[in-house]
Each structure stands twice: as structure tokens, then as C-alpha cells.
Amino acid sequence: MPEGDTVYRAARLLDRHLSGRDLVATDLRVPQHATVDLAGGRVVETVSRGKHLLTRITHGPDAWTLHTHLKMEGAWRVLGLRDRWPRPAHQARVVLTVADEQAVGFSLGIVELLPTADEQSVVGHLGPDLLGPDWDEEEALRRLTADPDREVVEALLDQRNLAGIGNMYAAELCFVAGLHPLSPVAAATDLRRVVRRARQMLDVNKERAVQSTTGNLRERERMWVYRRDRSACRRCGTPVRVAMRGPAERERATYWCPRCQPGPATSVAAATTAG
Image 1 (cartoon, rainbow, N blue to C red):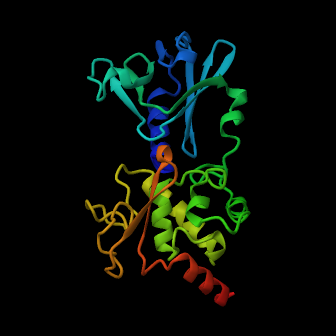
Image 2 (cartoon, helix red, strand yellow; image 1 turned 180 degrees about the horizontal axis):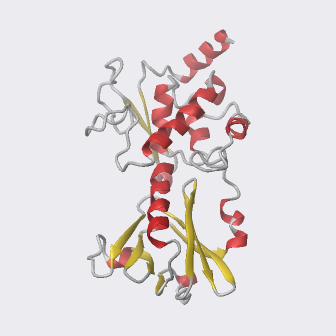
Image 3 (cartoon, helix red, strand yellow; image 1 turned 90 degrees about the vertical axis):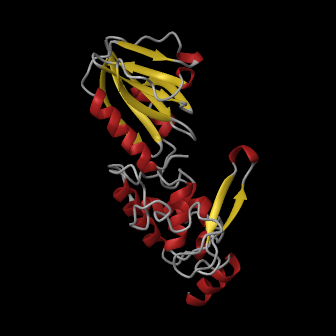
């Protein structure tokens, strides 16, 4: 699933090409909104909220928000009116057309149209946004530590705690912090540093298409452990391990170095001794 910085870039793309412009045609290719026509409306802005995209549109006296989510395979592209689409037409879920170009949302996991006044009904559950103007470090820490027995990787991935971390950043953050991803939150003796590093990672990557947590942009050199199972750890040379977890429809890979990131029992013992 795309990370928060990927969604941030998608919002910037839509905002740059559509905001302040009038829609000449719209096509929402989902059953619940198939008959909606927002032609003649004006795009006010597009913003990201964690992994959610909110495109605000005025249409006559009404203010609407197009809420979209990329989920696993979604993407937004802005194309010239005569350009060939990069994906098959049947994958298009939204087409927003202005005078000289169109924004096409392919394979979007969520497409909803709602009054702008009701936006909180779809994003109000989210924790502080790592890339948002509402970022609140103390609130994020409060939410993360509310369940000290929860596995740290699951706490980081829970968008209700802080919004924007996906599987890749969760794995990389655990590595740089020396935390086994399956350790309890209580084992993270400096969770504030983890949260600050999360914000730093997303902020550094939000302006570039190639993500890196190591500072190296070369292929296979960009990550510490993510998708590097059976490769040598960059720090100690121990093979990186991976475990598939969760139900089949939401199965996730968890990556770690068994030497640099001691197992849960070791981590808990170390944290107890240090305390």
C-alpha cells in the first residue's frame, strides 16, 4: 500500500493541475456515483490526509469533496486530452477533465463524493498526519503508547495513531531504532525518536519519486531491510528475515535483522534492565 509521502505527491499533482480551474466533464465510474455530473464546477484544492486524498469542488451553491484512496494498486495520472492512457480504460475509476488536460484515477480503492462539511466522517478517525499542518507529536505519542503491549509494528501501521506510515516505513523505522518489529511498544525506550525519524523520512521523500531511507538512491541500495529478505544486513551481514503475517486478504510481510533487532523477549528484558 502506498506510503504517506506517495499520497502527498499525488495530492500535489492534482492540486497543481486542477485547482482554480473549471471542470468541463466528470466521470465517476463507480455504481453509487455513476450519474453524478460535476461539469461546470470549480476545483478548489486537493489535499492529502494520511493516505487519503480530498479533492474539494464547488458546484453552484454546493461544496463537495471527492474522497479517494489508492489502496494497493491505485494511482492518479494527469494527461493531455490526446494522450494515450498508461493503463487500460476499464481500470479508470475517476476522470476529471478541464480545458486542456484530464486527471485519471486508476484502480482507486475508495471513491466517495460527500459534502465538504462532512469530511470528518471519512478522515476524522485518523491520528496526526506526519506531513500535515495538524502534526502533533505529543498526541501521536499518546496514541502510540495507549496500548504498551501491542506489537510496535502494528502500532506504527495503525493510522488512528499517526497517519502516513505504511509497511515499508514501519520496517525501516524498526530497523534504525534497533527494535524487533514484533516487540511490544513498551520495549521502545525512545519512542519519541522513532516518531521524529518517521516524520523526517517522509519529509525527505515527499518531493522525490524514488524513496530511500538509507540516503542511497541506487537500485537495491535504497532500503535497510524492506524487501531485502535473505540479503545481508547492511550493518552486520546477517541475512535479513521476513515473516508473512495477517489474514490472507490483508497479509503483510514483516522484515528485520535478527542480530541488529533483538527478538521480543530480549528486547523486553533489555528495556526492563535499562529502566
